[in-house]
Image (cartoon, rainbow, N blue to C red):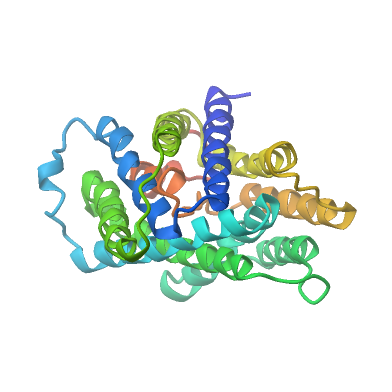
Length: 318
């Protein structure tokens, strides 16, 4: 197994730990805006240490496509709040199964705006992933909550952010692509949390620090993973988060999916991986808009992917 794949497994495990901690805040007194604010603020700490050596944070405002970069950041605020609301209100497995629909929306946007061609085989794999999600959530057979809608919103917004990123990453500084979205999250949520502000306890501050530390470590591992392995090898590893969702959900939140949900999760994983590794497919690593997950490091990997590292498995490694 390539070392990059092993690093990716550890990175996604750390991201899942951050997601589980975020879900734990749902039982407290902090609003979604305040959770997003503190998580984003502490995420600046690891972001500082992942800055490219040839760039300066003071130059983050120098952009070639300011409207697109700011649009991605604005979309990020909404997606960030959506995914946090989902994690704190519905089971982890539900959130993951819905947010993993992101690649479907990415493909649709790529066809419309980037004029890419998608094979019937890939459309079938994507459709089966959607069927798997329906088996997990089962609308019409169980009560849907606002959190399910927010998870779907996060998937769609993440697709928009990823599509914009693919357009601007080759031309923009990475400090802009990383720092500006975090700045939007902190400033916007900092304003919106004022009416319902509750001072976090020292324990909660400690958990936010853990989120920043684990997420930052995951970012470093993920960047190194994408530099030492092909995207087609790294991208399928994101589905390992389903396993972590099952473990954390059962151990910490007493969430136990039924047999139909297990079958749906299996369909999501199998066809999601088949979509990623299908011959000739353009590999995309989905940006989920969490301040401590792949959205933060997507800017780091998008530029080399656009330059040609994103190749089918039959190609020679660059």
